[in-house]
Amino acid sequence: MRLAIYGSRRQDPYFSRIEAFLDTLSRRGDEVVMHSKLYQYLLHVMPRALGCVVRVTDSPDFTADIAVSIGGDGSFLRTAAWVAEKQIPILGVNTGHLGFLASLGIDDLPQLPDMLDRDGYVVEPHSLVEVVEPRIDGWPYALNEVCVAKAESASIIDVNALLGDIHLANYRADGLIIATPTGSTAYNLSVGGPIVQPSAPVFVLSPIAAHSLSMRPFVVDDSCVLTLRCDGRSPRFRLSIDGRSVMLALDTRIVLQRAPFVVNAILLPGHNFAQTLRDKLSWG
Image 1 (cartoon, rainbow, N blue to C red):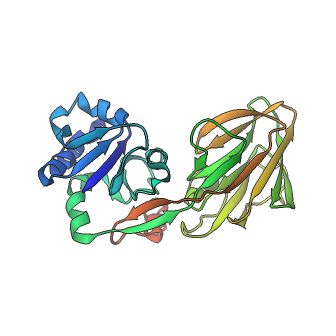
Image 2 (image 1 turned 180 degrees about the horizontal axis):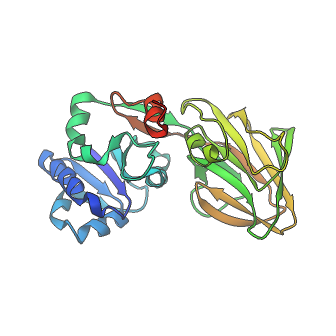
């Protein structure tokens, strides 16, 4: 088996588990493609354990059977960008806080290869938002959300939203979140948006601190093309794509659609979205 491994570079408390995991892969004869940042980080503390690494790269020019993301949900998002359009199944190993995207705890990491052989896994497709316009540097896709927000010095922003050719609303707010089902438990949840089952073919539009009580989160079919135009006192506004931000001129048109590919998340036996919600949100 060939694994692609990405991880946060803040793993000091978990060195023993990571080293045991890599030793297991070496003993089994598995091959590892490792992101260059993680490799350089581990090289200083466990060089012997890196014998299973056959390729070190930060580009998506590799093949693998599965990808393993070690960290929190942010690490999972960066792993998805690293894997890019290859749609290699990704397994999240949680060393963060909530870890909605994780299917495994860090303490179980050394047993992961044997678990996969013994129990198998299920692949769950997750949709993304593509920023069609404007053309931006970097990966133009969001697994969690795209956010249009006011400039820091501005009072509010007006976001005029169209679904296809149909005018939906003019959101007067601090900003507007366009979330995927995956991202419904991220920024969207913090502003009062609904939690959505990951397989649902929808986007969620959630205003941030709306200046009207009638402006509520709205769930739309993700086959719609969404067009946004902004107005406000500031000459610029902020566009964020899974937390990666750029400042744009106020007259810039934003066009969003569902991406033509998915991120495949690995679910281990016994792991499902309902259980995750009960565990992470203490629903009992």
